[in-house]
Length: 117
Figure 1 (cartoon, one colour):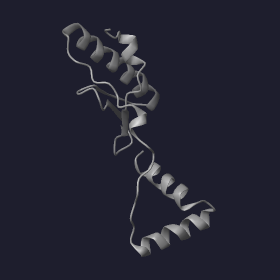
Figure 2 (cartoon, rainbow, N blue to C red):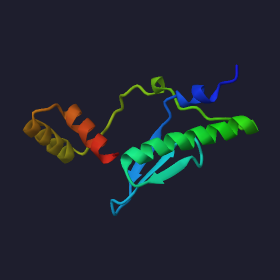
Figure 3 (cartoon, one colour):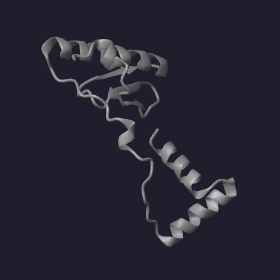
C-alpha cells in the first residue's frame, strides 16, 4: 500500500530548530528528510515554514518515486540508560538535586533537556 502525502505528514518526524547565535533567525530541518530545511525570523514562522518544506519534499519524492524515510518509532527507545560518573561529580549532582528538592534522576533529566534545546 502506497502512502499519501497526508499519511507521511502525520508521522512524528524529528524536527530540529536552532536559533542563530545573534538571536535574529530560526533554522529548522527535518532529520529524516535530507535537505528538508528552512529559515525564518520567528519561531512561529519557522514552524509553519518547515511544515510547508516537508510537504514539498515529500510531494516531489512521491512524484519521482524516491523512497521516503520514516521516523524511527518511539518504541525503539526504552527511556533508560546507564551512566557512570566520577565520584566527585556524583556527589555534586546529588547535592544540587537535594538543594532543588528533586531526585538525582529528575535533576539529570532536566539538565539534559536544557542542554539539547
